[in-house]
Image (spheres, rainbow, N blue to C red):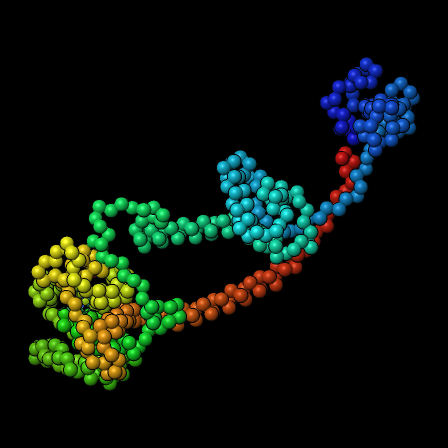
Length: 425
Ligand code: HEC
């Protein structure tokens, strides 16, 4: 089959003197003088084909020889899977086009190849080793499925986290049968000295806070999970803690006679509670149970901020709000009416270190103390966290280096492919 047959296939043959030429031989060229379909072909080759003696080369029609061609194939980085695999799924195809386009816009990489990429003809485009590596890396990063998947994961995760935190979907307002103040005023965010990613507790504040707890809160609240030994090295020295423990009588036993006995406290003893049992605690507080404060910072929405706001937030009930006998108005407490009265007043305690004992100072100190009580491992956790970040980022950097070192020659090689001249082309 010649090039001419190829080009004339399917065309009517009657333009050549009413002599239909059924076969492919002889080749059907344009009549003499009316040629020009293929002006690059020598006209004289065909002139004899219509009645004259067969010209030289009759049986071997004109064969345009393709010039020797060099095809460059380059293994590009992070090549997209061929879009053609999507051709049966228009919706998916649309999605992948959309996202690839959107990402590329966002990155505003001045890549001229983006349109070819977008319409799935990437395989046809020839790439050279000299292609700017960084732009193609960014481009393939921005159009990779992994990026699409992780971006989707981040958005879905953020929405899930928001929903978990606030109980409703973002951007969708909700109507409530009850007023929001029934759930308590949301506490402001305070600049705690231990709030930052790398911040540790203010231990002088923990020590003052312990004093406030001991002298004020301990009259009603227990702190079951803290032992005297836990204070050692945190807010007190070992001998200070031992001395404080020895002031308290603990029941121990049984002894050799089977009797329980009283003994002074040891470092291993836990801080004593004010009431022997829950009933006694309720009886002493008008039916309300003062909760154990060991984990209260973790147990309340808003944590430290909420407890500080609660301790300093006692005000007179606003007009129209009735507070029954024995209850107190606090806008931060859900429902507004709390059994605990305001307990902190300026000058209530006298700090060892001379810090003026204002209401807010005492509240801040006791909340710092309670934050430590709820999370004694806090400082150590952050220190370990930094170590982990240092180690893992170093390992990550090393592995990136090694990966590039190993893959560099493979990814930057250029493969030459010289196809054999195809006679049937
Ligand atoms: C006179 C006893 C008394 C003293 C002193 C006291 N509280 Fe309370 N506290 C209570 C009672 C009773 C409740 C339970 C309130 C309720 O459920 O209505 C309570 C509840 C709490 C709550 C929980 C609030 C909530 O959201 O459920 C916190 C936190 C708290 N107190 C912290 C403190 C701190 C800190 C101190 C010391 C500065 C302190 N209390 C001193 C009696 C007291």
